Every structure is written in C-alpha cells, then in structure tokens.
Image (cartoon, one colour):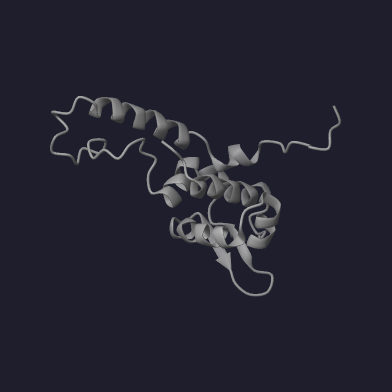
Length: 143
C-alpha cells in the first residue's frame, strides 16, 4: 500500500494536536502548517474527513481551532488513514472483501487478503497516543 501525502500529513496533523496533551486546547491550522511545514490550504482539506470520521472537532470564532474529538488512546493510526485515504487495502481487488464473483477462481486473492490482514493489524495496533508519545528529536545537538 502506498500511503499518499494525505495519509502522511493527516497523521502529522493528528499527532501534533494529540501531543499537546490537554483535551481542551484548540490548535489553529496556521500553527500546524508553520510547525510541520505543510500548506494550510492542504490541512484545511484534511480536517473535513477527519471531522466526518469523528476524530477532530472544530471551534469557531476568536481563539478557535481544532481539537481532539476522542481520547488519543482510542484513535488508531488506521482510523486516521482510512478517514483520509478511504482504505488501507494493498491493491484494488474486490476479492479482499469478498465482493468479487471470481474470488474462488483467483490465484492471488488469498495472498492479497493475507497482506491486507497484516496491514490492518499493524495500523490498528498503533494508537495516536503511542505516536504522540515519541519524544521530539532535538536538532540543536552538536555532534
């Protein structure tokens, strides 16, 4: 599976918001854009599916921004990727979800299902809290 920039940037956005720790903190997309070096316009496109999936909430008005809609420990990396990518399937194969009429005749469908299972288990085994807990690298260290 090739994760697009949507998936990569959505993870970075969610990790940034989750890493702040306080569930009541509202984060402006401009702040995320500046810190993560991602276009604010692109982030605006990403927050829509994340809100639709119930992962983010928005607060309008002065001092508004975005905040977690769920505890980061309840949000899996797979939830974020599926919200913005649509799927974590490794290939476009209807046999993975048994909706293909040729599944029983296909020589590769078992392989794709197995690979899909491995991917699903991995992305659903890592929570946003796990990702947000990784300490930041200090780039100011002199070697």
